[in-house]
Image (cartoon, rainbow, N blue to C red; front, top):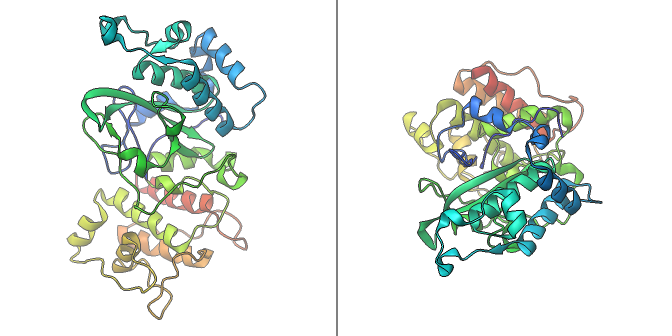
Length: 353
């Protein structure tokens, strides 16, 4: 892990901290820089965890090397070793329920708040960034609920250890059907046909290079990188995915949603391609960011070339009144990776900010 990780949000994708709660981009106000500094590389704050938490995390993760393996092991341990405390049936007040990590480890009994606190503590002790989310379940909108969001090997993943391992690394669309953030903010569902690939081990291409991590974390925080694109950093993004990065940049710089931005210019996203109806692609076309590949085709799944990416980025910069970049990060003769694409987008955004 990089010496300095600035973990910022969401999804597309950002979110809700224990105290004030970050939300996915577009769902609530952006996090302040002051608040984010609390979440710079949790590995530097392991000593803030108790000896019992550190020892427990070390035992759970013994012999494991990857962050995903450790996160899965910790989640499984919590669900199997901590029982739910139905305090109301025992005639006790909520104030008598064990909620703090050391208490929960001692009694092995708690409620959702204790599950979330313990999970966060164990993951942080293992050097894994983890947020403690507060909200409600859709089945009990009047009852508080708590769960977690962890940043594991280059992407955010949801986990709700109160409800068991079936809620580990679930895609946002399904998670959003049952979890509502504090303040009634619903998680932004992904497209109905989107599913997160099931991977027992995170592939090497999903882990960003250490040198790029600080800016990548900042890009995520700024809402420039959709949740489902927070992986595959070493692979080449598709033409469709690059258009999505351009629209995220437009929205973050302008402070308007794509539809509102188009309306302000007297434009609308009309279907113009026979092979792609993605809203972001159509909006990018309406804004002149892309013109497709001719013959009414866009070729959304084709890998984007450096030349195509630079052209789209330059047009987006001109649209927003920013200085067009001279080039893209990385070797000009090589293929463009998602990591390099996000760095280019973030650097253009940072100059404006």
